[in-house]
Amino acid sequence: MTLLEIKTAIDNGKIVYWNNPSYIIKKDKIGQWFIFSQFTNSYIGLTHMDNITLNGREEEFYMG
Image (cartoon, rainbow, N blue to C red):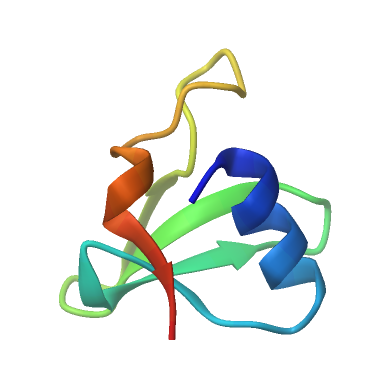
């Protein structure tokens, strides 16, 4: 999925995963995007600091 596809899916109430179902894409109340790890209960940014480059390959993101 592209960054736009991920954001659109989340905004439309879909669940998007990265790599496996343990990593869920989330958007916080102020519009920041994250990859949430259920194993470690921690977050990393969905993108690099440029807000364009995904922290993962497009083919690793999918809807559940």
